[in-house]
Image 1 (cartoon, rainbow, N blue to C red):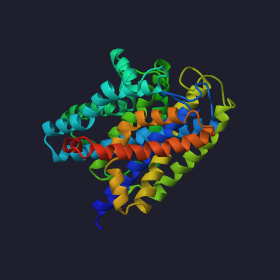
Image 2 (cartoon, one colour):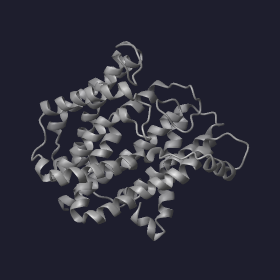
Image 3 (cartoon, rainbow, N blue to C red):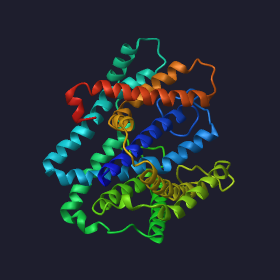
Image 4 (cartoon, rainbow, N blue to C red):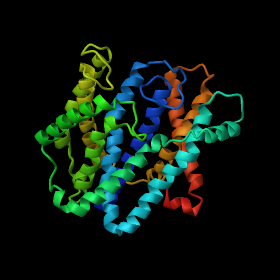
Length: 364
């Protein structure tokens, strides 16, 4: 078995996990977690374990997506002309973004709308009311912006000139984490977490920008494949300690004020907590999957081929299941697990049906 095949297999497995976490994250919000979503069964519910799950997810999962996106984007650009690369970006990112913006967004809002009308009528009403937005496809919007930035930077200073030959040391990564904490805190003074600018939550973007361009820089010497247990261990310990402090922070034992932003102890805590937690989880997963989940399998390859479609389609599917199961007398945890699994499996099915049409294969 070649190293290339192994590398692709463990990255495929990571993409499956991260996509499932996206579904899990939004299902958690539905049943009492923190964050904004189309529909919540009990709008004012606050379920501490789900809030903690959302906070831990948020510390790493989208940043991890950006890291992997930068890593593989450089490889894609190396195989194509700039024109073909831009066409590919539009096909893979722009078309799903437009479809979600103008079609799936009003559909998802219609599914969440408690009006006495058919779904088709509510959907058309949402379209007429211009209930448009990128929803989870803000990620595609951000990647298009980042790709354009990368092309501009690469014209000035080619990536080969800013690609390190080895992984940064512990002290360097710690300084970066602390620096990003300072920048995040400063950004959140103006744009608190939960507020959007052009549908992007800029409060999280200092870490996203860094991880995307770190992925770009890591590609030349395949640095993500060089993360081992020894390298990840101290960061895993830091992540565990950071996570252990979260319940105390949520009980307001470490300070007062909103976590989303502002001149207060909780905002400072959260700004630094994000990278200090996320670094260890990302590095730990890179090591674990390369060490233990690098063997390709037919089922995992089949799922990996479809997880991008799950990401695109999961919002209306999740809202539909959530609304459907609302009358059931189950605990929020039971509904959370059931809706998450059904949404992921249904997303695979919907994507498989789409892939029956040849043009979709160039997008999904």
